[in-house]
Image (spheres, rainbow, N blue to C red):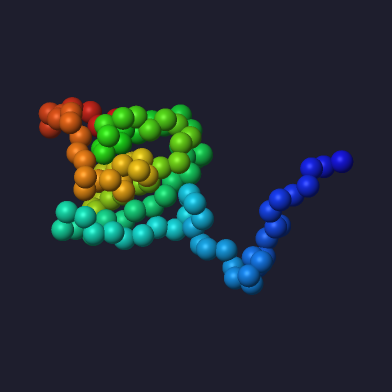
Length: 109
């Protein structure tokens, strides 16, 4: 016998509304204003980035492979301007900065 499902199989929710687009991670995106610039922010589930590692510019710590996080880039920036952030670091970006200062040609991995 299979265990009982605790979640509805789909369709409309109990209130008759369709579920929100985007969900917790991996969907949708938003535009936010930061440092006098518009930024595109998109949640990433981390599942598609298996084997890849990113360094969060908010805390200068590594984001392990497979961990949900955010990707942010300036609205008029290119693909090289994308940065991967921990969700909490992005929310606190105005309250903290990295204490480690890298030289201009240091790697950003």
